Length: 88
Image (tube, rainbow, N blue to C red; front, side):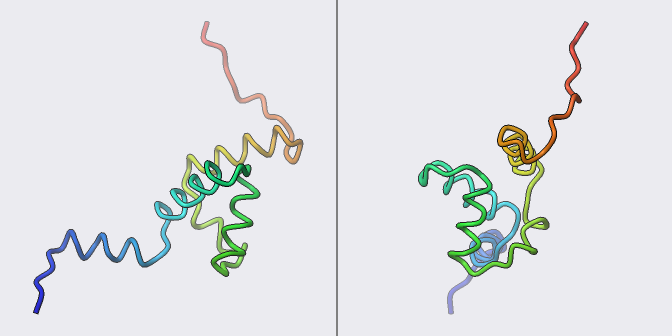
C-alpha cells in the first residue's frame, strides 16, 4: 500500500477536477498556443471538454474576467468605460 501525503493528494485532486485555477491556466494555454482571443479560447475549450457555457462564469478568475472585459471592449461587444483615473 502506497502512502500519499496530503500535499500530493491535494495536487492530484486539483489535476483531476476543474477549478478556477486549472480553468484559467488551460484558457491561457489555449490563447498562447492556438492564436485565439480569450472568448474564442473559452468557447473552444468548452466544446472540446463538453462543458456547458452556462457553467463558465463560476470558473472565471478575476484576472481572466478582466482580460475578457478588455477584449470585449476592443471588439465593441461592450461599451468602453471611463473608470481609469489619472494620477494628479
